[in-house]
Each structure stands twice: as C-alpha cells, then as structure tokens.
Length: 196
Image (tube, rainbow, N blue to C red; front, side):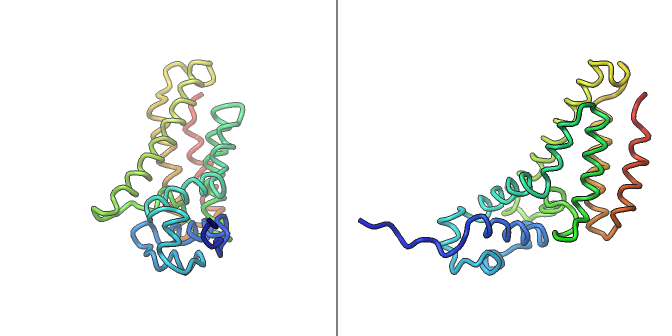
C-alpha cells in the first residue's frame, strides 16, 4: 500500500518560519493560523502530523533557536577560562539580540513571561531552559573557584545569578530598542565586578 502524499513544505524552512513567528509574538500571542500562514502549511492536521501540537512545535522551535541564533551560548562555554566564557556569553547576547535579520531580544527570555493557565507548559519550558543556563554558569564559576581562577571566597552562586540577570536584561533592553553599542557598554560595565 502506498504512503500518504509527500509533504508540500520543507521541515527546516517551516521550523525557521515558526521560530520567527514565536520570537516576534511570543507563545501565547501566536495562533495556529499565524503558524500555518508563515510556515506555508495548508491546514492544521498537516502541521500536527509534521510537528505535533503547538506546545510540541514550540519545543522544537526552542531547540532550533539553541542550535541557530543562540549557538553563541555553547561557543561561549568552550572558552578556556570562566572570565572569557562569561564575557563571550554577554557580548554574544548583545550581538544576537540586535541581529538585524531576526526579531530583537531573545525568545527564551521574552517568549512566555506572561501566560494564561493554558499556556503554562510553554512558560515552564522557558523557565526550565533559563534555569539550566544559570546552573551551567554556576558550575563553570564553581570550577573556576576550585581551580584558583577566581578567589576561594568568591560567591559563585551570586555571580551566576548576577551574570544571568545581566544576560536576560540584555535581551529585554534589546527588545526595547537599545543599540548594540549600548549593550556592549553594559557588558563592559558588568564585567568590572569580576572577582580578582
């Protein structure tokens, strides 16, 4: 027996378009009709067959974001020192959140801050991803303290919270229209608290 009709859309292109819509409008502000139009998919059943429901599609989009526009995060953690990693993370955020080819800001920061009860799973997914980022930064700073890169009495937990707050603030400021140069200036100021 022959299979169904082949898809009339490219999965990668469709995911990129869905990312753009969610990034601009947030999870709750995005309707299935918005996604269908942007992704070039004719009907909701085709969307669901290819990507699952809206929440499942959103998770796929967040993974695509992490591998694409936000890959600078992984690259930052590859830096040889914790200081270089934090600097690369924050400067990378300043660049990525002001990239002219994408919506301003960061989908994981802005995508679901305010949600109604039905959208809580999306908000929880974003919260978990932000928490995982802070935990990774905390581990890097704890290792730096253990290795003597930062003083033994440095507050790795407090530094992780501080730099995470700056990182998320960059996204909010970018979404509000701050320029790339302004954001890099904020990073330079933030890095002055680095323990020595």
